[in-house]
Structures are given as structure tokens and as C-alpha cells.
Amino acid sequence: MSTHDPSGPESEGGDKPSFDKQQPPQQGGGTPEGTPSDPYGTPPPTGGPGVDGPGAYGGTYGGAPGGSPFGQGPQGRSPYDQPPPGYGPTGYGAPGGGPVPGMPPLGSWPNRILARLIDYLLVQVVAVLLVLPFASLADRSGSASAFWLACALYLVYEGVMLGRDGQTLGKKAMKVRVAMLIDGSIPTQSAAWTRAAVFILPAVLCCAALWWLIDGLFGVFDKPYRQCIHDKSARTVVVSTV
Image 1 (cartoon, rainbow, N blue to C red):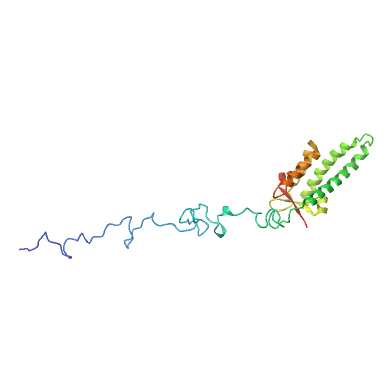
Image 2: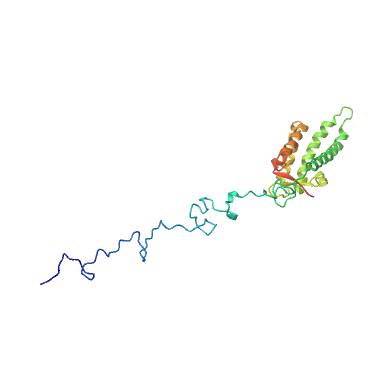
């Protein structure tokens, strides 16, 4: 007769497994070691794209400390914190610094004014000599014709000379030249002719003295490029060649 008591505790090696010893079910498809592997619990590798590795993202947001979505630039700074080209210790308005790094300093106002005066006188003399044989000195009938001819000659003269090397004869004498603001190169043909046209055509259509005064004063108060209206329209700047 069996002496087994079904109400008694099962032995370690009994037929029925001990429920006290059963391991809890693993969640999320655990690893062989029994460690849960939550696909959303593992933080992504640090660093943004192109910063610490290709395709990587930061532990906060976007790869930058503090959660910046734009990543980091040089020296741990955001690229949006960097000053634009041409600014800084050698940038606009700096002592001895040109509009862009490596460009000569801006031309001085005395040199610019004298260069313009030299050019104007040269063109005016040529215009007078061309008109003089057909003019009447008694009633000054040739004065208006000389002015109109001088304006036409000046437009062609400046457009051709600036498109060639950025200098007219007056600018060569005063050691200044016209340069493209973006990189200091010789003005393009479009910029050269635009600059000449904006200087001359309003003077022909309206009062010449008043227009040239407004144009010049605009450059005096312009900071930091010292651009007159004709420079603004052509995106040029006057620099020194010394």
C-alpha cells in the first residue's frame, strides 16, 4: 500500500515541477542571458550626421549638446554662429583690412574725388574740342552740345576702362581701382557698364550737379563699404592699389 501523501510538499526531484523555481516570462524577446531587449530603450549613438560619424544622431536632439537640431560647427559652435565671409579682424571697416580677406584697404575719399575730377576734366576737354568747330562763341550755342557729348563719352569711357582692369586714367593716377565686392576681382562687363550708367544717366535726365551730390553723399554715410549709389547698383567697391 502506497504511503504517498498528495497533500504534502513535492520533493526537489518529484514528478511535478516546483512553481516557486519557475523563471518569469521574458518580455520583448529577451537575450540568451535573460536581459530584456527593448528596441526603444537603447539610446542611439551620439553625434550628428557629418559630425561624429555618418548617419549618427545625438543623445539629446539632432546631435548638438543641449538639443540643437543643427549639429555643431568648428570648435563646438553651431555653423549659424559663424560670421559670414569678409567679417572679423580683417573684415569690413577693420584698420588696414579690405572688404574681403586679402583685398587691399578701401580707397580714401580724397583719392576717389580727385580721380573722378581728373576723368571728368579729360572727357570734357575732348568733348569741347569735338564740338568747338561747330559752336558759336557769341551765343554759347555749343555749351549744351559739349555737355551732352561729354556725358556720352564718359559713359563709354568708364564702361570700357572699368571692364578692362577696374581703373580709369584718373584712378590710375590716384592709385585706386574698382573691384567686385564679393571677391575683389576686376568688375564684370555687366557691373562696369551698370556702374557707369547709374552715374551718368540720372545726371542727363535731371540736374547733374544735384544727382552727383546725392550720389556722393550716399557713399560718405554708407557703412562699412563706403559705396555710392552707382557702387550699390553694380555691387562694386573702390579699393586702394598702394
